[in-house]
Image (tube, rainbow, N blue to C red; front, side, top):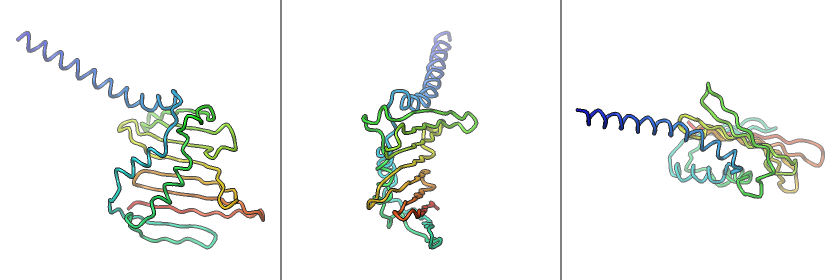
Length: 194
């Protein structure tokens, strides 16, 4: 009887330790990424999303808004040019070690929402990625959203992009193109998962 109670106590102790270490691990992943200077890899995340969801028959609403108006259509995930969409995000990746000292890094924890936000802000206005915000759900360790503000050049024109990705919910690409005439051309393309 004494051995059974000792074994039971030992198992209870091991269970309690593993529960505490799992809780600590959820925060550790996010904090280590920010505190050790290992900037979040947008490329790696989108590659993982592709590997996980490739070939899934999702239906999406594609909503395009520009000076001409709003166009809405229903599209199949199987028919979309995912590379053209993903490259908008890949171009903003700051995980390379050359970016290590070029961003201010902050973390914010929201106890009510059980989220941790990693916030990277460029120190130099010439960098492509000006803001990278990654929101992590602390309960399941999954990314809730990625928001990016980027300065890019396309066909010799300066453009500012605001990119949002909420896994299996929303992909949004907002663009402001600054024309030589001084006019700003704005457009937004959203993909809403059904």
